[in-house]
Amino acid sequence: MTSSELSALLVLATVSSFTPGPNTTLSTAMAANHGLRRAMRFVCAVPVGWGILFALCATGLGGLVVAFPPLRWGIVTLGTGYLLWLASRLWHSGSLQQADSAKLQVGFVQGVGLQFLNIKAWMLALAIVAGWVAGREDATARTLVLLPIMVAYGFFSNLTYAVAGSMLRHWLAHGRRLLMFNRCMSAALVATALWILNGLRPSAV
Image (cartoon, rainbow, N blue to C red; front, side):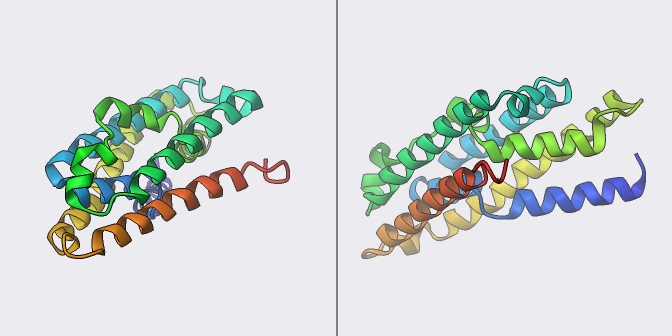
């Protein structure tokens, strides 16, 4: 892999990983409501799930998502439905006590599974495979180089957002601050779900 190829990948990884999305939004919300320690289960689950997803795409299985529209829409339907369900639970959580009573609970296994319902994660994995892996003589070697890089980006981007959320935890505990924060996070999840659906309109496919 040339230095220019690696540089292009790092730019893509930075933009895709550190811009707000369903994973970073959940990492922020969980750390703000439950604390950094509780959020780490999800923070660690994201790179594990995405790494498995990327490996599957590199073997060619991910192409089924593009080639078989009903499967793609099934992933989108389940994924957006789950995001909207989480958004509804966040919307009504206005105190740390409410949050700790399971308003927002996404464990490690659920976090790994959520990556397979995230069409944005699928498209990113497929884009990387198409641009940096598919058709190359050294495809296996490239996959082994790219996988730890993308897993690291997945971990540190979500950790960054989780740390930011945990730093706000005590400030949010006063008055209606947490309620307003959770509703902003809820709106972000809804916006993400709508963005995903909008990107799959017939004209965009």
